[in-house]
Image 1 (cartoon, helix red, strand yellow):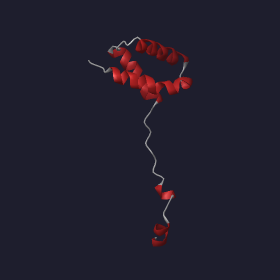
Image 2 (cartoon, rainbow, N blue to C red):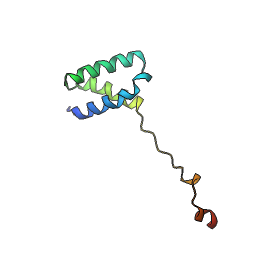
Image 3 (cartoon, rainbow, N blue to C red):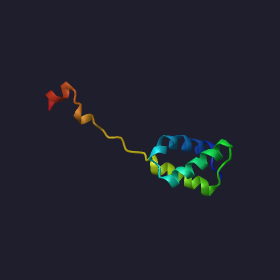
Image 4 (cartoon, one colour):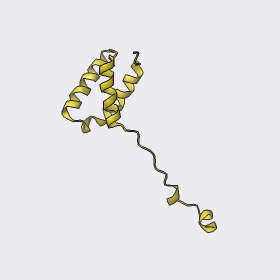
Length: 80
């Protein structure tokens, strides 16, 4: 399986923001990933899977809420 170095880089850069929230074991694992990444080592499938799991845990893509109903335009209020 070919995992791209840029995906690895994206995950590591994104996880940097979440370092303070990580558990000690996860932080230690993350720092090992950073060291390996600095050595420009491409991760194997197991390591990449662990990195991806950390990424999915901490940077969950949240659905953006639509607040348009709170901000009605004046002409919309008159017509209702």
